[in-house]
Image (tube, rainbow, N blue to C red; front, side, top):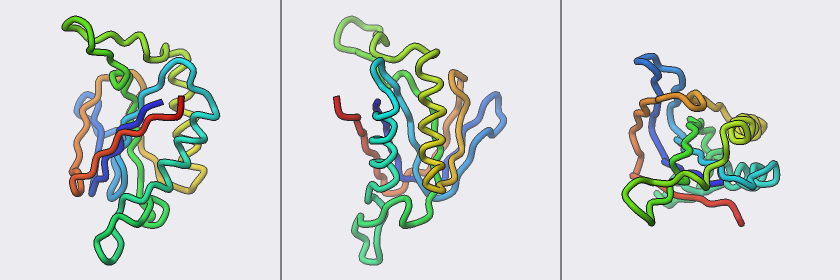
Length: 147
């Protein structure tokens, strides 16, 4: 599993011009799922995400987590995170999990974050989405699950 985490002051996702998910201060999470990901992967990534200390404390140091600040999450599925561009001119997505496997894991990840009492807004799995954000910092991190 791979996530791109962006600290945001606000973010939203639109489908056909309609806002389907929106958050205030928190994290925009772009989620890529690969073959072999499972419930243990979700548990590890969820713990990492909600406890990652990337929000500033009173001294301006990144010392607070999403849980500490009561932040929100906008979760967007993005299989292109597993696009392999090493050969040729067109990315290969062979590393990305098939949608029949990825969609239930995407839904499970959302529920796992919500279990921490975090407000989670979402896009729509497999849809053509437009994502808008105000990146705070900017702070953007890529987190890969353990192999």
